[in-house]
Length: 67
Image 1 (cartoon, helix red, strand yellow):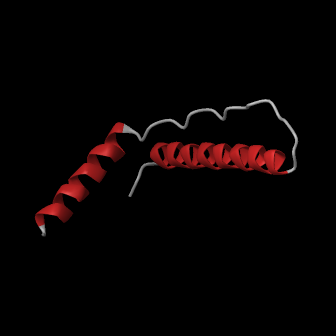
Image 2 (cartoon, one colour):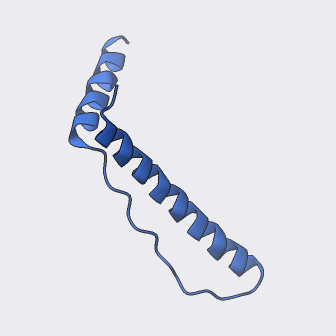
């Protein structure tokens, strides 16, 4: 089970991804309506915590080994 700080980091990363997607939708809607909007960039989501990345790598390796 991820630690509370890992969970918080993941929630923030997911939130940043949603914000980026919403900004893209806003630009697409404005373009379809013939409006021009300034290009706004959502903040880059932070990468996964090192511990989570290593756990994910181990799980991926285990999955690949099963084939």
